[in-house]
Image 1 (cartoon, one colour):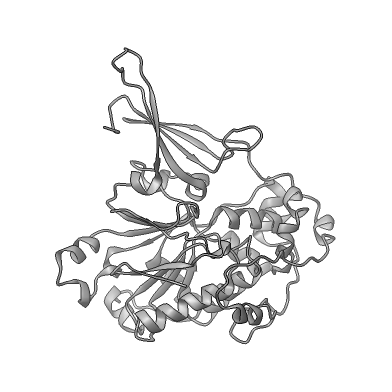
Image 2 (tube, rainbow, N blue to C red):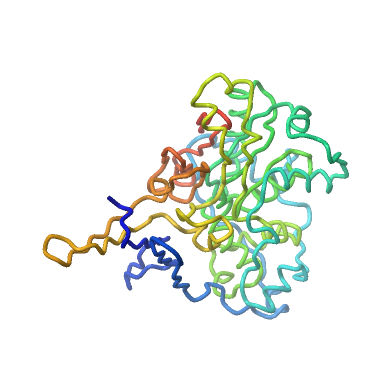
Length: 391
């Protein structure tokens, strides 16, 4: 009923402005057959302040908020700025404001796109091995590479929003209860690592430290990561808001890392094969196609390369505008459809962003934002079996 020949699809992310009641994010119009028509809003980033002004921002404390009533004691230990577990702030937060991201922001007054917008887990693992000085033979297969790891399973985690203790608890729980106390082959965060919660800078530094310790912990970029990066680079409007004071704890290395977060990470189907899921038809069907991790979602019937970064971090609904003639000769109906319902594959999409809807489970998509920063749960999904775990 929805996909009629004359139908239009309106994809809108974000919420209505309380005063103006206008959408504050990108709106994309797609013809049901053929091309796309795009209305892109004014860029959010304001003109950068001078380098001297940036260096004079001063210091500030992160805005504290309760992530969850769970594990209060762990929250206290996480506040240490030099945690022995690698979860604290880096020993030096000196900002030279001379990184490539800073230079781009000075010139263009907007946050730079990552070097690779749509990344691939296989490529990311190869680059990480090269950075760590580990050579990989050209004839290595996925299976040989994975056999060197203690586990073949992959853990995807929902929106963290500065809740460092819950992030550590979820990884620990999933490791011991769902993975025989073995490290996961890879862990991927669905974006919005920061903002709202009490330990945003520490979350970034924890993830970076895990990579430095040869653990395959990756992330995609979310809308809050984008906004925080803008503040760190000198966005005057954001830098003046107390909610972004924590960005002054970031080092050049932290900023460069954030600026290079991809918008999507594709997990090849070859990584989803296991001895456990070869015996059932359902498991075989699940492993036939790639998995795509993205922060907010993807537009249906649009190739990955044509997906727009703003929409990938903000989309929540697909609004269907039916322009077919009704019984009275000129009837129009608009119906909002959750992006998870609208996505019809064949790739399986894992996303976050939509805490209001909570856990969303559809045939070809799952939404993992279960509102941890609002005192609810932090949720992850374990591949290839798609087992859910939460704290």
